[in-house]
Length: 193
Image (tube, rainbow, N blue to C red):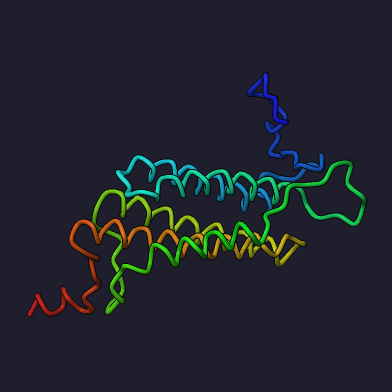
């Protein structure tokens, strides 16, 4: 249960913050960077939800926003060999499996790609592409953390699938507006001749 009655604590004024297990680390610690980037991703999904999005994408993104809080909570409590006072929240394979099912559902009506897709098109598609790139950065931050410390292996899998889903959702939004905006290799070189 979360209860916040004061927003500022002054506890971070010296450049350190607390993890979920009570330990204090620098705000530049890879664990803080990882779950901070997940928080940024969640905020970007809030922008994407301004839409308009086709059904059921808005419902899916709201579920994902909640999952990202689970993921942040997972990253906030480092795995330990010590028995925990309470069971930490961990991202589960079923959450990643749900993303895979949504990818398959949203991708089924789309035409196969014949070129790379530019991050453009409708406002909703552009917002989803921004979320996708933030998701990739969050995944990199999680892998940076994983190179130094133990993490739940489901966390980077979830983020990897989520970036795929966001790509497919952006394509689906553009399909309703006439199709993908495709990369034309060397286009400006050809026009300059």
